[in-house]
Length: 258
Image 1 (cartoon, helix red, strand yellow):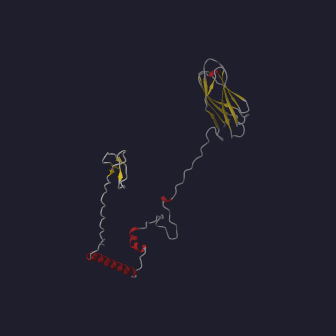
Image 2: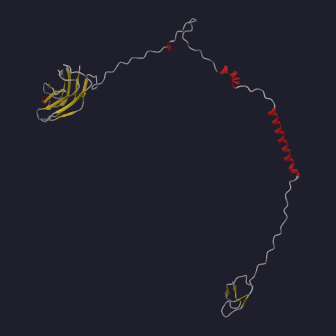
Image 3: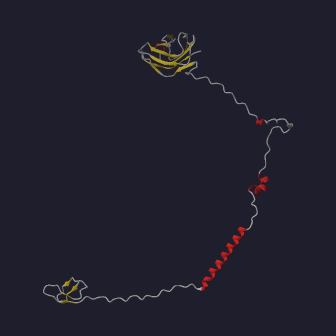
């Protein structure tokens, strides 16, 4: 860009043009040539000089090399010389074995045993007999057990309906005995209002009298139930024959085959 000295117009011209005129209308004055920077002289090239190691510095290095070479020569000579046989590990520890390990005497019983006879064992070496465990009888309500029980609470309706509690016997072949024991436990305010029956597996009915009036019932009956098989469902039926507002329930009952 060049500024015209006559009219002050700024002309957009390249710096490469040596001669140019003002482009302003009506001017056409000659524009001055652009100022150029003088060419910079090239830096003088200095010849490279290789560093030299003085002779004094090489003396320690040569000395270290001579020492290292002598050491390698000594090691090679030592490896080529014959060696004594190596001592085995057990032989190294043989002097220490008697001091470290002392055999303990073995207890063979009586020390006065004659030659050719077996020594008598000491009392501590004999085994004590194991205690015998007596067989435990099976619990009630299991096969081969004489007693079967029902402990489920069964409500007794007042004046209408009946309460039924069941016991199912299995694993007992044959018929019931003539002295079947039936134990009945009932919680009730007036046991005189109750009518109790034992129903066998085939439906046979055996009446169980209540006895004198009172509260609750805890009584054992002896029943000839030889006509009934042992296996099957035995049922205890309880009815309240008087509707007077007294209620209760069957607490538990058992049958026992002698």
